[in-house]
Length: 552
Image (cartoon, rainbow, N blue to C red; front, side, top):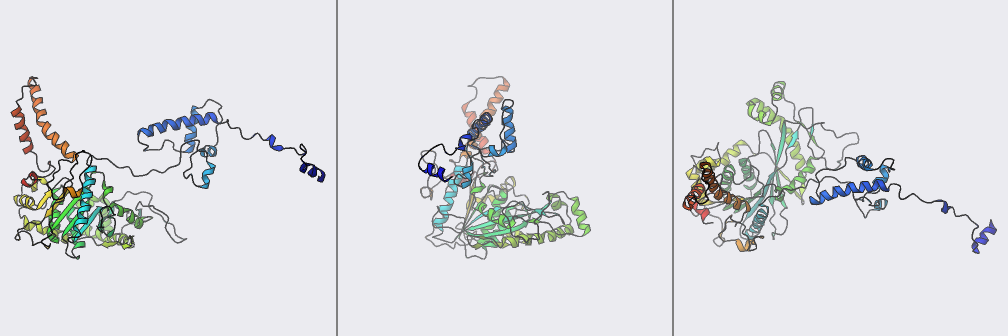
């Protein structure tokens, strides 16, 4: 052996057999046919996704085994089929910078992914509403240096389900793992069909920054946990809640509200406008400005950012209401949903149900009170009572005695002359905004607390530039007469109003058998158009057809 080593060091060859020559390696073309078919399937799916801007709404393969089976069906008979592990290693790595990515070949441009619930609706007015929100932020930044301004972003969270006694139901928020004793197991009911629920109502009092470009998702978070059955969301409940929050704060000159377009916040509804009048009178502010986002764009509302914070308090949590006595439970079992409980319950059943849910409300309030936004603790409020809401409504009874508070809809309120006249003198209504401002008559409105050098202008409407693609800046529009003529859906509604009478007349002419294009007199058409516009009700028009509106 020593002699052989000496000869090897001297450079002699052939003394040791190189066994590596016997290892020809793994055959590289064994599964080429299979992978070619699989690659064709993937390319066809990719081509379809490209036409959808790279978005897919469902997975094409239920599992890795399903993917292999689809490729196998396209291969000739007796084609070698690789194992699941080998196919998996041909995927693209999720993180190409991790060491585990060295195991993947990226031969197949597929990955394991989780569906993202971030798909957003588009709306013709989304650009217009974004410009309006920018105007609102710049208005708040400008006016806070001259007077006391309070800005609130309001919204309701999704309902939190409550299970029946003895059957706790999950809140639906899983989130991440939570800390529990080793002897305990977190469990919840195996289904989520419930008759009871809670509705957390969020009011974010924004800390107005020094620039509109900075974040408005800062400030105090106020949360009210309402029972969805007997404390359902409505405009007057929201108004009474804001009164409860703001009343103990220093005198506020301008109150700004930004909401979504739900039926309890939509500023075009008569009930929402009447609740705004109550809020305006109760807080004695000099100006109230309400704006909302475009339909399907509630993600623009700063209050939506608070929902993920509240989810921390609801994650891995299951709730159930308390047990009532046998007689009450017998009645509650007859009701199949919240509407039946609300409408058919007797006063005794109603009171017992409220007490049974109160303990659940306390649990949720306690969990929310432990949360913080940017170091500022969440303030949890008790729900407002019916007496608080009625106290807020007293302003409508005092100002408009003939107004029926049980029917606050446009077809009824437009007939109340005192209300329409008051709104003409104090309000400015638009499709996405509603503003109220004090008048100079001290017999009507209390004297303004503002200094004489502070002048309040209406929040302007977004106006397009000459390029018809971008809107003017707030500085170029403030203090000027503006209207909604540059709102896309306003243009469409006006076009339909004008074309509808002419279409009707043509249809009538065709029924009489006269097909001449020149039979219709132009004066008759103009008269029909004027009549149709005058017949448009306030509920159909985007804003009231008043003298103030005509002025802009």
